[in-house]
Amino acid sequence: MTHTLGRVSTLLLAVAILLTGHGLQLSLLPMRAEALGWSTSAIGFTGSSYFLGFVVGCLVIPSVVAKVHHIRTFMVMASVATVVILALGLFDRVWVWLMLRFATGFAFAGMYMVIESWLSEAAPANRRGTVLAVYSMISLLAMMVGQSFLGLAPPVDLRLVMAAAFIMGLAIIPIGLTQMAAPQSIPAARFSPRVLGRASRVAVVCVFCGGLVTGAFWSVGPLVGRAFGLDGAGIGLMMAVTITGGALAQFPAGRLSDHMDRRMVIAGMFTVGVLFCVAGWWLASGSTTMLYVVMFFFGATTMPIYALCIVTAADNTDMPLIQIASGILIMNSLGSILGPMLVSPLMAGLGGEGFFLFAVFGLALGAAWAFYRVAVVERPSHHEQKFVALPRTSFVAGELAGPEHVPPLDSAETEHAAKRARDL
Image: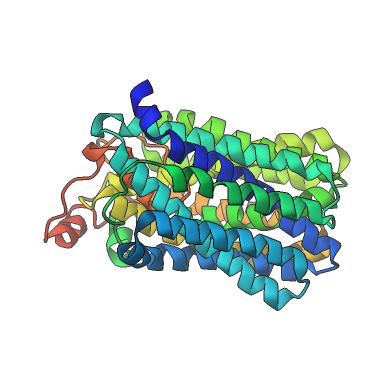
C-alpha cells in the first residue's frame, strides 16, 4: 500500500495544495462581495455562475485533454484559476465577477478530471478503493485547512486574495515535475435523464434537492455566519465544522444503506436535516454554540446524499459507474446552480434565518419524494454493490471506485436498464 501511495504522491500533494487554496477562496469571495456592498442576490448569482462553469467544464474538458493531454490541461486550468482569483481582487463589478466565477468553475472541473483520471490509471486495480479513500480524506482536510486562513485578515484585505492565488499556483509544481506517465484520455460525460431516471427516480430527484441546499451553502454560507454575528475566524470555524460533519457521516450512512433500503436512508437523512434546520431557524440567533451544532448536522445530513444517490442508481442499472456518476453530478450541479439564486431573496429579507428556511424547504422536498417512492414501489431485495464514498468533485472519480464497479458497456444497456428498473 505504501508503494501505491508513493506512486501517486505527487498527484495527492497537488490535490492538497490546490484544495487548500480553493477552500480559502470559496469562503472568502462571498465575504469580500458583502464587504463591497453587494446585495445577497448578486452574491448568490456569482455562486450560481461558478456551478454553471463547473457543468460546462465537465462537458468540454475531455475534448481539451484529448488534444493537449493531461499535464498541459492541468497547468492551463491551474493558471486560469490563479489569474481569476487575482482578477477578483482587482474588480468590483458584478458582471465581471459572474464571468470570472464561471471561469473558476470551468477550471476546477478540468483540474478534478485530470487528477482523478490520472489517479485511476496510476493505481493498481485492487488498490483503487484505498486510493479513493485517501484522495477523499486529503480533499476534505485541505478544504478545512483553507478555512483557517479566514481569520488572519479582513475580507477586504487583498492579502487573503493573494494568499489563495499563491497557494493554488503552487499546485502546478508537483504536476509539472511528476515523472508519472499520463493516461491516454478522459471519458466524455454521458447524461441521459430518461435512462438515469428509470434507474432510480429517487436518486435523480434527491440529488437535485441535495444540490439546492449544498449549492446554497457553498455560495452564501459565509454570509450566514456573518448574519449571526461571527467574525472571520468564526466563519472559518463554522464552514470547517460543516465539512467535518459531512465527512464523518459518509461511512456510517453508507454502511447503513448497505443493510437496508437505501431510499429509506436518504429519506431519513433529509428528515433529520429538516429537524436541525428548524432548530437553526429558531435557536441559532441566540447561541453561537447552537449555530455550530446545527451546521455540523447540516453537513452530516446533506453532504453524503450525493454518494448515496450514485450507489442507489447503480443498484438498478447495468450502466458503468462512471456514466451514472456523470449523470448524478450534472443533476446535483443543476440544483447547485438554482439554489443560490433561490436562497438569496430569503436571506435578503430574513437574514441568516432565511438560509435555514430555504434548507427546510429543499430537504423536506427530497424527504417527501423518497418516502413517496418507498410507499409506492417495493423495496429492492438486494443491493448490486456496496456503498462507495465518492467525493463530489468530477464524475471521473467513478473510475477510482474499482473495476468491479465498472461493468463493460454493451449496446443494449439502455434497453436493459429500462426493463430492469422501470419503476425505480
